[in-house]
Image 1 (tube, each protein chain N blue to C red):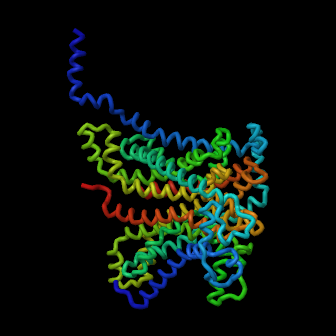
Image 2 (tube, one colour; image 1 turned 180 degrees about the horizontal axis):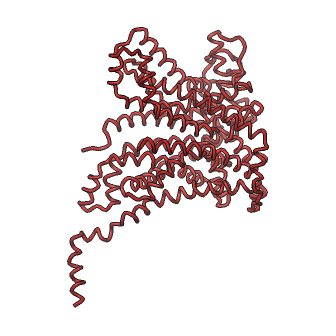
Length: 294
Length: 317
């Protein structure tokens, strides 16, 4: 259908508006992170600061040891900023562990859902549909009490266990339909060649499912990297905080340095944003290749 | 001789490859073994906490009780207390308003933006399409803080934009006005969760047969009529799914509240999850009351979940 010039201009305009809406917070955060608090408060009406500086990032990434020009006079620097490398390490370890565990567990279960025709496994599947609705706060209050008794508070293991359980149902729901698109004949052929069911799963189903495994892995990575409530409730000591918990701890602080906070926010959102832009291409590619090769 | 018949059985055995005999588990056993990791995890993190939360909601669980490890039974006491607490009722009401605002806006925007990026001849649409997943990746707490910075009364970014454009002469107090604070926290939430809704609608759009539109055009239907009589009715199932999913997640909103208003100004943005968190993990550290209020939230979302499960099953059949 041909569009008139007017329609086309309107569509371009609509796209520009949507793009601006999506990018606006990131632009604001970037401008905020690249200036000093003094310039933020001195000139309150102009979009761009009178002077640009990387000192916010320098202060954070040096763990508060290099104060730079901005914080030279500042007598107060939030303690948690000094522990930023603990937070980065905790976030990374938790995210990687949860991604590996959920993907492995979900793949095992999803295979039994589509290949083994067991009634109770189908029932497990509907439990999973249900499970994604349970608000985390409902689970976290009893988990806090239980983990307290088990000595799992203030450790990365408690967070890993809780996040794995919370994200597992998604995995089974995503992987099972994909496994179902792989022809059963491939499984049967492998078994005629002498594979057991389990090695057919390892050698046939899993290698053919890399697109689904990768997109689920990426989704889990993003959700566990971004999650706040679980580590917020389970870990309150600075050594065990994740990046989102450090950010949350700065909100209610005696003094909110917005320039510093914007820099931390940018550091926190970079890994997941980069990953999502990579995932995008991957999903498109995965769809183009299709579920079955030959 | 009895030995013959035994040996006869042994002769038949080599028909099956001998190595498989030892290794291959039956489907029942294999199904159980392969599900052990999932079953253990779900039992510990999902099933047990749901029942334990119910148990805790009928008991007094203060900090002192936690230290002692004994929780006195209080019956319906915690529920009576929250239902008599005006703040809890306000939190429920705020949750409803917040959800209504954000879900309605999301569904409308998702349909509009999904249709927009479906116009492949418009090249700017490719940039939009590329950026659509971006908000999804931003940590909710960072998202909330960035908007908190944008809303700031003294030096916020939104006021700077309006000053630069010459549209205001005095700064606007975006998140500090009790009448509009809920909208102020809803906008960042919509920003972050919109990608999910757009993707659902966009995927459904790809399933609509283009011949339907061609036939309608031949019959003289305009763009608006095509949208109203073809697109919208065919999108209805996915719209319902989006509505139910987004509603049940919006009910549990937490991060943006913590980042932007912490319930304020006054108690204008206290929502259900915030209430449970504050009662249980901030003074007065009353985990029993926190569990009871969280359970009310779970029951409301549970009703939605049942509706959703029924809906999915009807669609599959």
